[in-house]
Image (cartoon, rainbow, N blue to C red; front, side, top):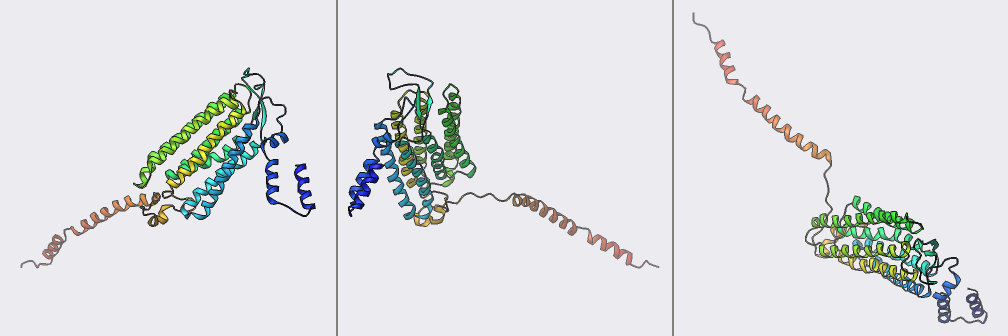
Length: 353
């Protein structure tokens, strides 16, 4: 940073300034080698290398471009889909910040490994654990789970259950990665069981809620995206087991592994899912196709409503009281009025002398 500041001052002192030259010099100061030099990995044996940091800078730029595109879609798309693109922008921005931190060699701690592999000087006793990655997933993963459940038309209870279960999954993995002995595998097992619950929520809502939305729903797209999600998260579980917990692969290989999975689960999945379900979103800040169904040439969709329990309880009472009143009225009508009149007439007749 000293060279950068001095170069900037010289340009101003000489009375000229070239924006292009200054920008290129700024990029050169932020390149991978400079970032890792300024933030050295002291007191850690297994750490990120220059190729791994370069890959993370590439993923950082991909999330940045995706965020710009999504921000454009937020302002220039129809209102019933803006909420979905807003959630996607939140996901991309979280990953954008996280990869900036990780590529710069920040946001990590050193943990003693449980399994020490004899591979020369590459593997040692302590390993770099990027807790920034787990914070990224804790914030981003429930957001794209919410997007999937909104596309399925899930109710609020199932949305909250899926989102919080997803948060618990990554929290358990974060705590497990910071433990050096065998007890971390207990948390790993708990996390896997919690993730199975998220898969069950997605499949359950797909089977029960999608049929209620009529023929306009693209069931195949939802099941395909759900299968893609399950596949990627199986690989996430493997990635955590062979990197932070098992110490099987290097930190650079770990960075490449997680980077590919993040691109697949966030950029690829969301840019496929949201346009496919844009006409059927039941509402994020709107009522979805129920508002502008005529413009989409699709039947409008309305969320099912339940009648208040008081109305449902009063209807049987009315149905029971009305027949009772009718029966009571009929009894009054069928009273032996003519007989009573005849008896009165007999009493009024004069008796013969």
